[in-house]
Structure formats: C-alpha cells, structure tokens
Length: 248
Image (cartoon, rainbow, N blue to C red):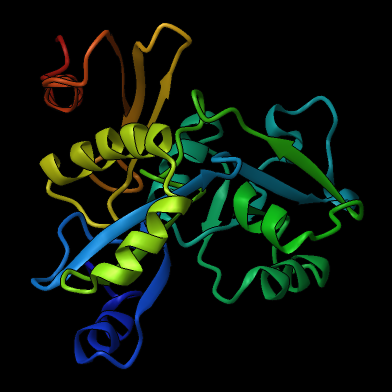
C-alpha cells in the first residue's frame, strides 16, 4: 500500500532516532506525515526503464527482441501494462528481490527477460554484458513519477540538518518531479498504481509532460502529452487528458 517502503524509517525520524532519511522518491507517498518534510531532492539519475533479456532467447527480428509468449519478470503494474501494450502475447510474471537477485533469476532461466529501473543498475555499477539490453526512452515507456531521484527527509523542526541539506538540493529536478507527483496525487494513486509520468524542461523553461495510465495492469493503456510555459494547472491538464472518455 501507500508508504509501505517508508513507514519504519519515518517512525525513526519522528522519534528522533535518526536526523535524516534518504529515500527513492518514487516510493514516497505524495504527502508527508505531520512533523516530517522533504528537505532536498538529488540530481536525477537516468529515469528510464530497461528490458534485460537472456541472450539465448533473443530474436533479432521480433519487436523487443523477445520470442512469442516469452516470460517477462516484473511486479510493477505500470511496467506490465506498457509492455503488454507493445507485445500483448508476452507472459507477465512477478519477481521479487534486489537487483542482483533478480539478475540471478534471469541467468538461471526463471524468466526470458526482466524489467529494471536504469537508475538502480547504474548506481550499483552492474555489468550487463551477459545480457541483451533494451533501453527504453522515458517519453515512450513512461517511468514512475520521480523515478531516478533520491529525496532527503528530515524532521520539520530540525533546522540545522535542513540547512545543511539545502546544499544538496537540485531545484530543476524538484520542479519536474513536483509536477509528476502532483499528477500521481490527483489520480489518487500510490506507488503501485499503473501510472507513468515524466516531465522535462527545455532550454526556454517550458514544461513537457508524458503520461501513461491504465485502470489495471491488463487494461487498455491511455496516454497523454502536454506542453506548457508554466507549471500552473499543468498536472490538472494531464489528469484531465488521462481521464477523458475515449471517442466512440
């Protein structure tokens, strides 16, 4: 459910056992508990999703280079619905464990391919040369809101730590992820909702937002793309497009 990954850490912050917590921002609820604040946002690592495939099963001419009815490991409803939108014949299978564990399961043939966040692979400096890697562009295979970003959380009253953390804050990243997370909030979802939102700003400061949403992982995929010179009501516009009835 919402906040599953963060609850125990936040309780430690509230008790004063720790001064600061570092989270993957995509796992954070859109509202902080009373007494806690998100003080700073990191630089953005590659926000893309990657499809990692066993070389033994690669079919060079096939879309996504996977054979018919291949088994793809992911527990993310968002990834499932976007993969199936490209290849409806694929079999989705849940996968658990950290990144090295998931790659071990792929190596031993439990799956033909698995989905991973590029940021996790990059931060761990994992060698993927044993595999075929399809690197999706985040505008096309839309990542989770704030994917690739770390966020620093502190107690609201801990002014000294908050002051120190301001040196680590990346305002441009915060501006983009704020919009992504506003869309998530207005859609009423947590980190398990099949919703992808990705925001970029161009050199002129304009915002460009790509979104993909399905009511469930096996439901039809809806897409939206919105550009604006301002962040004002940008999230609302994206949500309206995602929720608009499809023409008959």
